[in-house]
Image 1 (tube, rainbow, N blue to C red):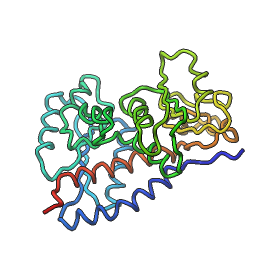
Image 2 (tube, rainbow, N blue to C red):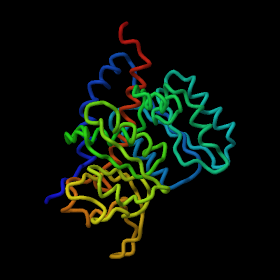
Image 3 (tube, helix red, strand yellow):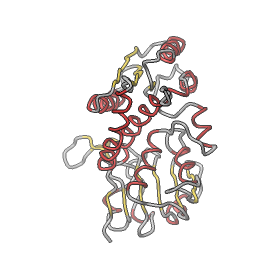
Length: 295
């Protein structure tokens, strides 16, 4: 069988086309969606990701400021900076780039962000509303995965979805989203993790597998049933044996899965572009919520 490629680049292009009218409506009210990104330290991977976000915002004519802070910044100082941005009405979204340095408690930092400006969707309030089935801001990567399903008309109702990885960033939120009684969801969802026994059996039974465990090329051809759909969230840098350079691979061994999987999201070019697209959309949504359109 031919394996369909679920292109995040294609889906994100559709998202950017759809949101142009929303941006124009805000501009008619003299409002430009504005994101502040706090970058602590000099993590090269974080810097690349933040630059990608900034370029996309600039391309769309939106505002994005990166505030670079020293690696040894105190937790109190970082929280004070967040509180300043919370009170700045010109800032619609606040994002603290993760991971943070070890001396800073990530949970305390996330809690310091106003839920109305938490465009990453990590604040306990936003995760709580998601759990209740009434989400405000949905974490960007899980939201992007659901948009891929919608774009390619993959209805999860009645399907068995297996999520591998239980982080608050991807695994837990996507396990909730896939099981909500909504269009394109309503699945029976199993959440697997490092403590799961007989994980391969769950994978072999799955109609859809969502991988977010950070293990290079973990999923092999013999782990899936014919026609299974694979969403690969993993981003791993490994040595390319053909030239000695580094290359990006996902959590799925994509070559071995081609011809057996019904569809698969590539790495790169799959979930990654959707994460940025959903950050843009969440920031626009935050700007819209700051305006009373009835006036």
